[in-house]
Amino acid sequence: MLAIGLMSGTSLDGVDTVLCEISGTMDHLSVKQVDFMTLPFDKDVKERIRTVIQGENISTQLLCSLNFELGHVFSRAVKLMLEKNNLKAEAVRFVANHGQTLYHLPKAEYPYVPSTLQMGEAAIIAYDNHIDVIDDFRVMDMAAKGEGAPLVPFSEMLLYRKKGEVVALQNIGGISNVTILGDGHVQAFDCGPGNMMIDEAMRYFYDLPYDAKGACAASAPVDAVLFNALIQHPYLDRKPPKSTGREDFGEAFVLDIIKRYPSLSAEQIVSTFTSFTAYCISDSIQRFSHEMPTKMIVGGGGAYNDELMRRIQGMLPNVDVKTQEAYGYSSEAKEAIAFVILGYAFLNCIPANVPSATGAQDLVILGKLTPNPFKDSLYL
Image (tube, rainbow, N blue to C red; front, side, top):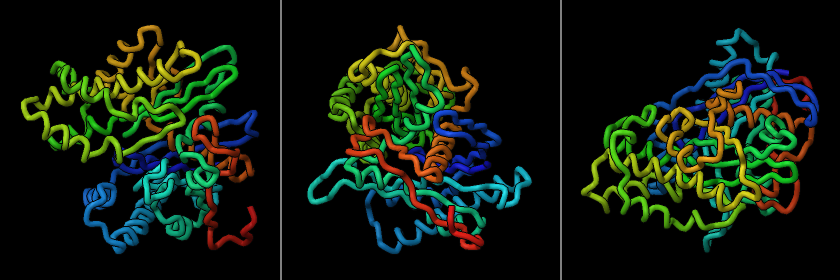
C-alpha cells in the first residue's frame, strides 16, 4: 500500500513529506521510498510557532488558531505530494503525521505533570484530502508512564538490526538522538542539541537558517572557556531513558550564552556550539551504551554539516561514522519514514513503543485515527 508520512521537527525548517510503498509483516517488512519533499514554513507561521515555544505572550486564541493553521500547512504538503506523483487520494491508504511539537515535558515540574503537545489538526488533513490520518503518536506512551520519546527506534529495529553487529543510528535534527542496536538489546535516548544551537546562532548573527556544510564553524577555533561551561549542562549527566527539546537548548538558552560571552566572535560561538553538539553525541554513547558500536549511521539535517561530521568522527575514532546515503537511505526522509511505519503498526494493532527507550511500563499501540469523513465504511 501507499502511505504518506509527515514530520515537522524542532529545527522548524518545514514539513518533511515522504511517499512510501509499505507492505508485509513486522518480521518481514518492506518499505520503499517513492518520493520526498520538504514544504518550508512561511515566515509568519514560523514566528507564531516560535512565540508559542518561547512561552511569552501566549493567548488561548493563538493556540487555537495555530492548531488549525498547521493543519492547513500539513494538508497542503499532502496535496502537493499527490499532485507531484499524479495520484488520486484513494490510491493512498493513510497519512501518518507527527505534527509540530510545541512543548514536551517528559518529567514532572511542579505544579505541572508529564505531558506533551503536538499540533496540526488532523481533521483538516482528512477532510481536504479524503484520506485517513493517524497522528498524536507520543501520548499513549506517556500514558504508560514513558517519556513519549524517542519513537524512531521502532522503525530502526525493523530496518537496520543485523545479527552480530552493534550499530548506532544517530539522528541529528534540532535535537540529536541515538538508537543503539545490539544482538540482545535496544537503547535509545536524546543526546542533547543537534542543529538547534548552531541554527539559532546562525539566525542571530547572519540571518541564515543554518551553517551550510559547517563552513562557519570550520573558520574559527573552539573557545575552551565556553566549551567547558557547556559540557557541564545537567542534561548530559542524566541517565537514559531521557529526552529533551527547545526547553533546554532553544533560543532562550542560546541568547543567554551570546549575552554572557560578548567578547567571542560569531564564528567562535558557532564553532564552539558545533563541538558541543559533537561532544553530546560522543559522550552519551561512550557513557551510556551497553556495548560500544563499531558503526554509526547518521541521518537528519546534521548529516550534511561536513564539519560537524568531522568532529564527531574525531571524538569517536574507533567508530566508522557515515551518513545514511552511504548505505542507500535518505538522511532527510528518515524520520518521516519512521512515522509511516508507526502508522502501519497502528493499522495492524501492533504496539510500537520501545519501553527500554522511553521508560514506559508497557508495550502500547501508538496513534489516533481521524478517518476520511467521506469513506463508505469507517472500519479499518
